[in-house]
Length: 313
Image (cartoon, rainbow, N blue to C red; front, side, top):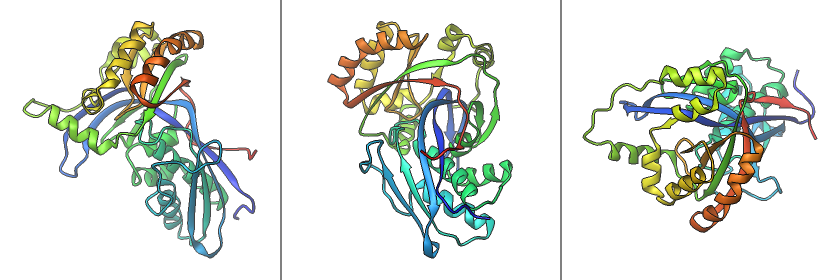
């Protein structure tokens, strides 16, 4: 049975505690070895019946205004998710999707993938499908490399192009100061820049060092700080050099480590707790505002659960 009222779901942003990038594959993707962690910064998707079999979407910021850089058309990952799920189920039901975005657009935190995962969960509940987890993961993998992790959440090892995920037990929680800015950096441009930066070097198969996984399992923040890595960081900084200055300011202010989030331009500063995040933010904020367009700071924590249905407001 389908639901008669709207169904609301949310999905978290992701960070990469490690992102190791192998050479480009024949299909254009890169082989990856990554440690994902979901953090408590969420996009929400509300799904409600829509007559005539159409899938419609509108994307709004938390204040209800349209979101720059997001096209509300058939290319929207939430639309593609709804269409893929109903095709798998053999349905022609319509759905109206409303996306409330808090995750930076093209910021390296998989906001589009979160929208797709939340749409899958919301539509599955709206249409009363009861789709099993493995089938949802299979549908998610066809939508994008990070969508399966947005379903799984918590902490996980990602391989392939990132779509194959295996949970990693994580002790305690991590606290991060997130520095977002505009405009976004399209992931394809950053990967292309990484290929240029690494041209002429021997790029082998990617692998996550066991020491990082041990630090995650132990909840050891100092060891975690020593083990984080992002192979795309150099490329992102080459496209936006001011990112390096903001990272340096964060480390000087007391952050344990600073790194680019995924393909950027969002920055992550690892801190001990919220109090330290506030202290570091007080020092970093003026630097980020001076050097980066539209800079905003927020504190996030991980790990958190993946996409899930939540009560309507």
